[in-house]
Length: 231
Image 1 (tube, rainbow, N blue to C red):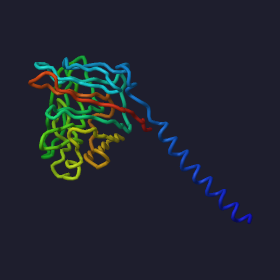
Image 2 (cartoon, rainbow, N blue to C red):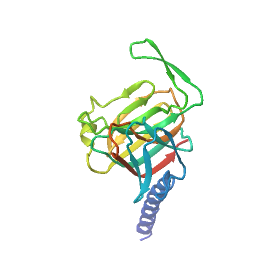
Image 3 (cartoon, rainbow, N blue to C red):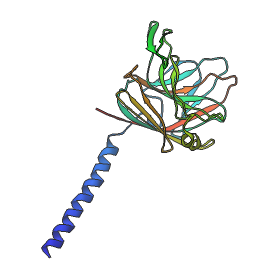
Image 4 (cartoon, one colour):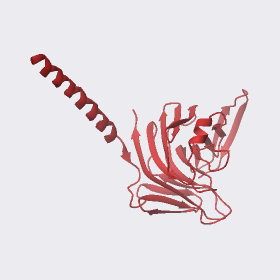
């Protein structure tokens, strides 16, 4: 009888540890968006309209303005970022991570895939850095990693058919982004998308992009934006 009681107690403790461990992991996530206003965010780049409605951030295209970015007022280095987004049928967009702007021109130098040295000057006040793509086109590279205003595509999804098929046009989609050291991994609706090793930028802000577009009124929506910082 004592043996049965001990086993039951041990199982209870294990179960309790699992539950509390899960809760502890959840508690490490912090909201980046309060659902009420744009406190903690600042707009950079173009003049697209950003507003809050129904616990969502809605970004609306404005003809004749460059790419617009709603940026966190804090920088993040290593983290797990989770959010939901509702794509416009035609408007390209993305989520910037480890991105920056500077008061002066910034020059970057790197070696390309063919071993050649490349240089790019980024103008002052231009948002640049890693972007997790939102691509509503038939190409369907949503979840790929593009280097905004710097090197271009770093990890497209041309060889990742499952990720391309995971995108849901006209519905809410989920992103999970894990940035840790030189590793950046993305997941689209739970499906592995990009897997990048790159060490050009180790920290920067997070931003919601509305791409420049030929028409007014196209909308991108984001909600449930939260982050867990890693050591």
